[in-house]
Length: 159
Image (cartoon, rainbow, N blue to C red; front, side, top):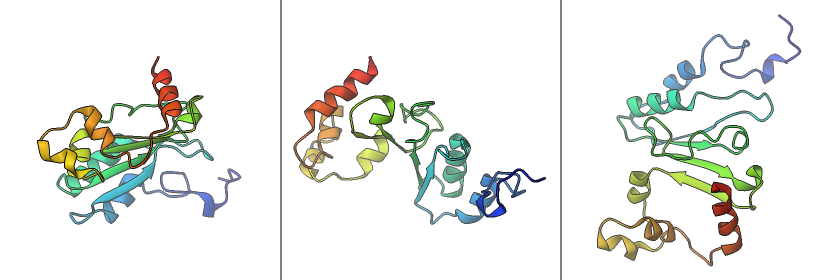
């Protein structure tokens, strides 16, 4: 079938490749894999990826040690499905740019709390007291002066 798309531009999961993305990915991931980064959707082809299936595959293949990072910039204005990244089966980290949501020019990284606690921010003294409050956890990752104007704009998106 000639669909006008050159074979070189057809990626996994399209008509040009009979194997699915999950099949190809399962050949690449093993128990030593620690990070799998993927885009949630293609802003060129408009193809949305099945994030939950990839997360399940990574967790099974790595015995829970692998982390999934999803770039949600292209899909955020249309489908911000993983804003609560602690959702069962979702990614460990989800990244979006708030200006795509008519918000401030501010990057947003949403992560599972358990993964955030595994990593040490530059303010490692905050970790000495045991379980951190949400505010302390977030502040431990801020290495400079906060952009208060952009943060207020981000809060405004919630409303």
